[in-house]
Length: 419
Ligand code: MN
Image (cartoon, rainbow, N blue to C red):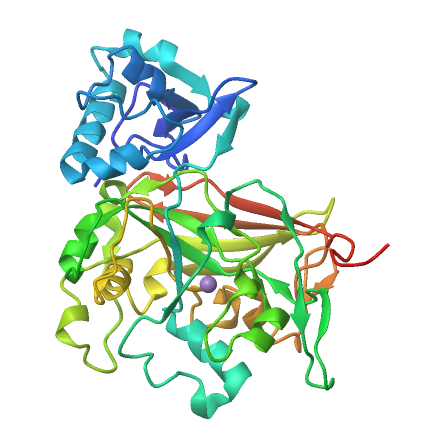
């Protein structure tokens, strides 16, 4: 699909992340103003809350955008999602008749503060990237037992915390937790020394379900995608994770990009999952291309220093699609709600330069990474800024998510110390 031209000139540049083809959903505020729903177009944001209040956008009898999150649109389902996209394209296309009505509803993106774009109903994180699972399994359990016996049959996941999902730009505090290094007999309560990133994509459920759904239904139910950094304290994780999986290691924070990119915008970038090594049971079988060709990158910037690219990878490296994860999630009859967030699992490519976590990049801390500044890292140090970037490259245009940025602040004083 070629670039769709907009009368917002900045949207037509080939490297602009927000062309008319994209139209991602966010929540923004200007100065002391209330947060509003907005859609990114070029270097502007269309104030959708104001557009609806003025009747420029009218999709349903009741307002959808009088609240600072996109869940009400999600709940309306695919027909209304498509109606909104059609209306936005009509309003913002080159030569649009209603341009004079829309121009006053645009605000400069540069002056906007971004907020959480949706209310996270629940958050589930998967472990569905094969290169990551093999790397981590090799480190934790040895090459012989790298992939657990279930791994090629189901996308493994754990129930994460919706309460600590934050939007890009939110500072992240190094967590305390119980750790036990192999050379100590007893655990100790300390700030994490092996705090890490996980480069992931997040899929957001739009249409609710109450009972098992097929992979095709699951794909239809997904509203859109965000970049997702699943911050992980590896030392807390190593001690706590057996037999029930990660708990406090993953609970401190999860950072998402400020913009939700709709499935419609990603449609030209659909790709197949890799060849199945073991035939999947019928309820999880692939039924069409449900991954996306999205180039991903993670950078690290020490305080006051330029950023170094740590890794580049691609969402198409996943073994399971978000649709397969959502279908699996529903098999027990578990209801899924609008605003449910599904983390893909860390996305690593086959090569060292494509690994989506410091755990893998530094091979458990044994192989320090040299930054452009000459400093080295095994895991995150205080005041480091970690940034995830994502882009789908179309024919003369780019689909972006906005970066997912987080600076890691030093741990607080011992929360349980008695003065
Ligand atoms: Mn994860």
